[in-house]
Length: 322
Ligand code: UDP
Image (cartoon, rainbow, N blue to C red; front, side):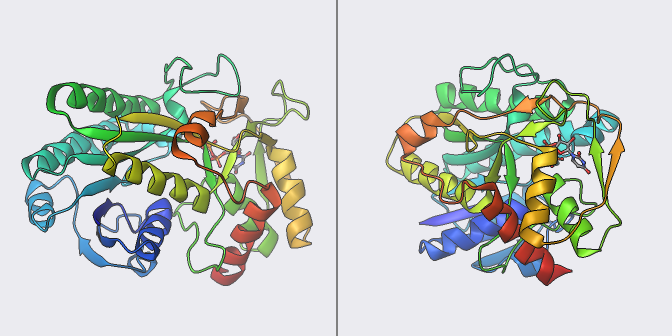
């Protein structure tokens, strides 16, 4: 199977490219390296270019693909509030351009990386696919707009897609060949581990006054390999001719920021200096996925659901990178 991975040099994309390669797919990565890393693309062909450029898209897509996966998004909530133009341009306008170019080349199977941020403030947890989608920031709105466009494209053009709504992607390749390398890093687990390794002086805990047992925010951390396995299953389902779908992806277990720090201290055997800081804008107290639909329909079975394992793999990567 020939698969195009847009954003294949990024954190999730690079793990995805590796998995597709192991599954015997012929993979092409399109990435402008604005935040990704060329040396993270371990399989297949690499094309450096921006997916907002129609000429670049036409040239790449003319190679012929059975499907495309789109993992080239801007993902920082705070930045999306400061610079919504950047988010709507990249995450919406450019993505619609990608869909146009795919349709022009007759590539009709699309895996879209969406997010729990399309739901907004939880009205109940764990959150299943029926939970109302009322995003509270431009990042979440940009992703929801594409989800809605995809539903319309299916009705009008028969364009098939699967939207995968990630909760908190974490961890690294168990062999430590790949891992999280954002710059600047904003995610909790890599920051905690950088504090453990001494690359950072400590970790700020954003809010201890939430309505949770220890007062810190609760998130559902899902191992990057499990996330990629869901993409692979979703791709196979589309190739079988199944209908377009959306799935929430998480382990169904929430861990607080403090629990993540405690577990990281156990895994690393290091003391992690902690500073209490104010709440971060736009952070709901608790985000936990109900992923039964993915389990039931795709046969998805997370292999690394344990938080200590997720942190252990991220620590192997941090130990290598640091
Ligand atoms: N967080 C924190 N300190 C940090 C980074 C994150 O306390 O330096 C908290 C953040 O407020 C949230 C959780 O850790 O409750 C996960 O944040 P992250 O940015 O990793 O993922 P998000 O939930 O925003 O997708």
